[in-house]
Image 1 (spheres, rainbow, N blue to C red):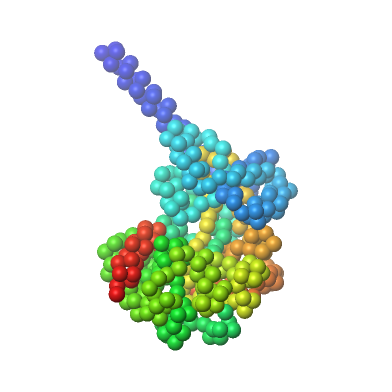
Image 2: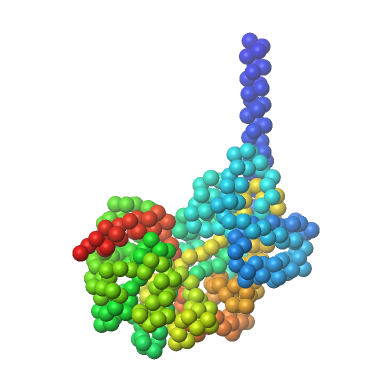
Length: 413
């Protein structure tokens, strides 16, 4: 009996030992989130914040190293260390640490969105909800916007802060298309009146899929319908009829009579630059500027979006569950959501990417600065982009549309 009692105690002790770090981490998180903002900032002094992020763009890296890091040091005495690593790799690292019960890691901020966020959220790899504590989030972010509430169909629920946005737009040559279409109905009419001058990439390509996804939104009546249902194949089948009908209606009038499609955006851009088609498209509202400067696109290139909506894609910053400096991470993220940081990021000298802030919430002085920033003649105004912005839905629809497009369009003779 004594041996049995001893065994029970040993098992209980092991159980408590295994669980206590997580319990301690949960207590620490609750304590942090109960602090007021001044207390959070005070805790960050003389601390290091390690930010793990994709490092493949020199402009982004320069923005972080030459602009963000020095200001965090000067204003908050935070040393920001940028660690180049792709999201799947650092999520694997965090997942391993979670399984091992390692509640004291070495990652403070991660740059994520889409499927990576969904995996991190589902596996409890994130600290929070923390965004509502940050003054700049509360003051400048439109928290009711669907692209902030959802990250590719997954509810964000305060576990990640929006850092920037890109938006799906169409580029056209205004010398050849003086009045670009404003709706898919007008696009169909234009395509019929200008046979061979429009096409879209095969939906196995990201851009081609985005074009078809936007039509799926129209076919479903409202993007909220898709968000509310999540990924639902029956819903997709019932609500995609109009989309397939539309694509088959314009098919004979496309480039090469719709018998073949560009494999990717690069091929579509080549057709546009050669003048074979008059409209191209892409998931970046400022993408045409560099191509115009390189004389790939004609200088008369401009952009438009459909008035029924334009797909938008936000990317976010999160804090790992085992960050050793959560207060420092929150302070750094709050700074990166400041108008000063966001307006600098918007300037093409560094990144040229759209803000995550609501332009209408900026001060008069900052709105003036926003208008002065020259993103280029082909880039639509921030107010226009926001007005027609629509969020991405569950990423499983990407594969569904890709597969069914072949059956419903390619094989439809």
